Image (cartoon, rainbow, N blue to C red; front, side, top):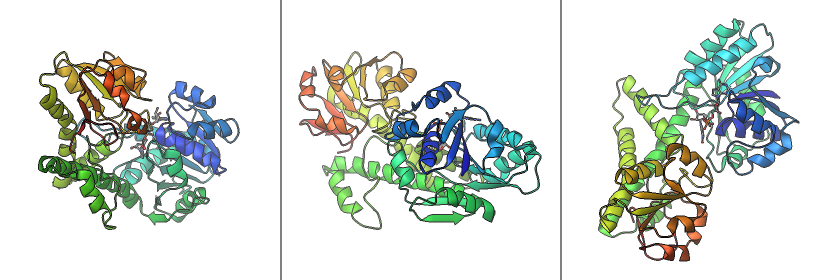
Length: 423
Ligand code: NAD
């Protein structure tokens, strides 16, 4: 099938490369020309395991990229994969979605062939039907039913995005008519996963509810961790016993410094904002966010309880990405921690295997090191903020610290003498 994909970020680029691998002819449209250039050279502008190999295999063959919407009418399907960042009030900012929809509509003007516009971005219920469809139809001036709409939310995990594309737990397809549903289903023909065919609103809501539930599991585990630490009980032992209950599952029960990334914080906030706009008071969701906000700062509370006033202290921060296996620092829990350290006059010595450059855009004035050992040498304390597997190998590197105060926000270290944020 011929497919256009709008937005060459984590979701759009991974989808483009993976749909090419499935044998489709894919054209990616990205407004950032620098990204288009690197993609066309076979270099992904983001780090994602397996992505570069796929890009190199398909670019110039059945995958291409440009900033030009002109040929959209030659495809059967266009996926919208642009960002839906939080607005100041926490609701989803849909401006990128609106602009993409208008550009698609203009490009489809004068065309006659049947076309399906699929929203893959995470959007509040109602967006595909009341914003995307009218914008496309108005700009295209086509009201003959030849343009159809679908919503196909994305569930990939950064760091596992390619793997997740080919082995999803489920594929959700929301449609208002049979043609669109059949077409989107056909694109995933070679993927072995349950397909949930539903309405547009339900598909949009499934994505928000999935993320909100996972975020709830994390905040719940963190609250239990805080209680367990005071009682001298290991929360990881507790959650091991809890998670083996098949009604609960062991996933997302890892207590720590809280959740970050481009999805959980913004999607829970958007769901809160949506609920409030219709007169509901989403108390659980608000608590999930409150627990998350205060959890990262517990790293500072534990640190101060160990070394007192932080002014002038050298503090190594190991891990800047919001999770391991990615260079993405959006809403990383390292951000409020570094902010608090800098605010208290501490000298921050940061290390991350991949995310240094992304974090340097947010904190240009802290020191970045090329190795954990470099960051640790001479430090008065160390905070571990990301569960990079390589941190589990660190041992003698901690001997190079001025004093061996090691506080983990993620349970990853194997060395002696460490203290956990909530264990
Ligand atoms: P991103 O910011 O990495 O990428 C979006 C890209 O779209 C950018 O490169 C931007 O330049 C481009 N763009 C914006 N407007 C455009 C336009 N009009 N035409 C062409 N290109 C345009 O975002 P992302 O992380 O890929 O997320 C995209 C959507 O998918 C969001 O709604 C997000 O919530 C959702 N999502 C993300 C993930 C994830 O792990 N990142 C997972 C599931 C769902």
